[in-house]
Length: 488
Image (cartoon, rainbow, N blue to C red; front, side):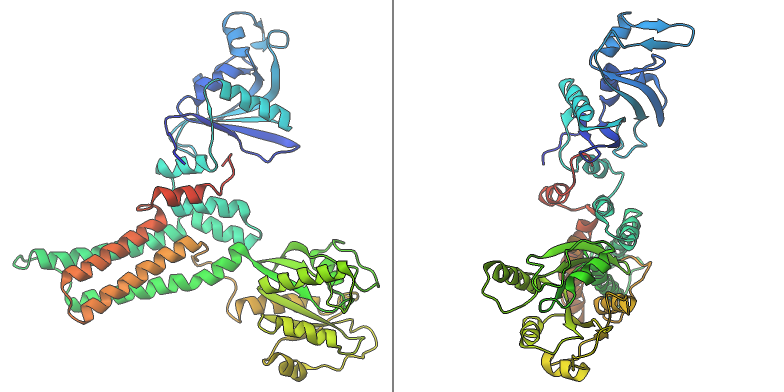
């Protein structure tokens, strides 16, 4: 992505489709001048003459400003309005926001044109500004300009995408902490500590005869070990952060007609899946996200495992097995009103190596199933959680949700206001910095030359700089920003 910061860029910044409003955004040194050419305000004033962070009512027209400047518009001197209706082709009635550099999202002049939320009007506005020299923005270019112009660092830029994609309130809160500089500040503080240690180490080497107060070898070793422990603590937060950001895949599986689709509908609070008493009604995997105690859970309802020769049923079971292979967690359902069957045992063989919560459904019916926790432990070769519920009567469903979240967090505290890592790029860079710091510690312990220690520290500092974007490559930047939508 070769970005020319001298260009003025434009894009539609709202989703395609019908809505209350749609926003076309311009950013760059010519944004105000170009907006002047297409916008006619109610009072005839120019956007380029307006104060920053103000909104203006008027029309986007294909030749409006020129018509006004040439006196071809009809002005009502009494109220200061101008009738553009018969003098130019009106594209839309709009509100335009003027934001002047440097106090804007990109630190450049920005114009936001609030149109009616139909795609035709928005497209005509963008086509019009492109014809006047605006370049269509690349994916994520507005945010990339904010980064390149120094308004935000790279972790904050990435948090913008996390905010957009947040699936739960907890995910949004974590992304907002990162946008506020939480991860940046933690990494920058670690980096400054390593720079300070490196400076003292090199001062002792370069100026051995000078009366310079430097850390002793013991102090340097202690400070490096402390920094490494702090990096390890940050790295430990990644598993927590990854779940908050990306969620987990949870497959509901079991033999046919145990209530999988009914449970799916109950978790989603809607009739998403067809439910009938006929075994094999679900023949394909149905996937939907649900928020379970702050965890984005992709619930997957699969076709029941049953013995059949039918082509559609066999294909449904093949897809079920694929989803089970990919699942982070499995809800294994049994029917309290039916005997433990060979098909139940077949499902257990498929999920033996997965994180499993066993659910006995239909406890409101006459009990025929004779299975307890000890029996399941023999089948799985380990202890698995066992819950008894009734989807129809809504019995113990809250307990099931808690069991899912407890299984995800493995008994650890799941709510935290601390800074957590959610991005694998950040994790890998900090892990590399931790390993290099460890190399420096090992070198000191065996009395390696200070130059060797200093090399390890320099590389660790560069690795931490990659997190915030201070020492990142163009290739990495391109991979990050190509994930954004065009208007952001």
